[in-house]
Length: 335
Image (cartoon, rainbow, N blue to C red):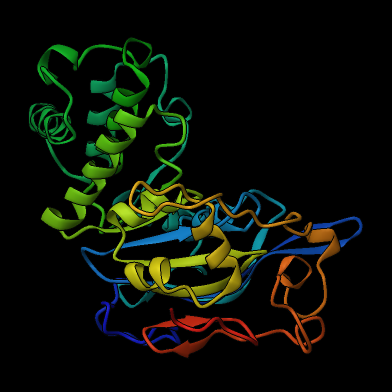
């Protein structure tokens, strides 16, 4: 999909690498079943960066985990489809899904230490990952590992090949994790808050690295974050999530500068700008509803300054509104 494609993805896009259609993820509890992701649909084309954004608890990370088959039990996908290159992967056996996760989908998480084994050198971890997915000799795997470290910006990769994770800074560890995610040559990278634990200068470097991977290698990237500034930097399109639903989606410039959903407008108004002078930043009153206390109708209506009938009673559907799509009974006018 590109900027000219329909804003609301309904499935069957021949140009898409990843297609997610009406995805639902549930967590059974003693008090009942909690739905963390609700009928989410989107697609990503090769070489495209899709930003998935929203507050903590919106369902972003659960969506990313569902794509790579890592939803924590007892959570599970209960409806919808996930297709990679036209092949359905959400119903694969675990053994087959592990092969897809390693070879076709790479993952980058918020804390690089959770993805690295502290007992093994980073070179050994890269070589073992490469050899699991490619029939290469030790020497050839080492050569590829060194090339990957160079590609992600590790200085003097040959000298650092035998070092351990604790000998790297946080930014360098995240680069190693990205190298691991790329080791098998995946077509899709799922990056879940990859810059949150890093300082601002390192954040920018990691974001530029992901952007370069998409541009030069044709890798599709799902970038999950709560930071609209990061999305504005590198995403081609953005999907805004609230209480498990995608409430607005479209080309990044349209969503950021001409939001149609009041929640998106609130997110935009809360971002400081060096270009626009504002007397004060906006804030969205209240908090996101708990899964155990989801309001009727539009989940955002208790916090929405524009709410009126039928917002409290009827669930809005995601519908096209020009370049974007929004799930709102009373979408904002384009400024």
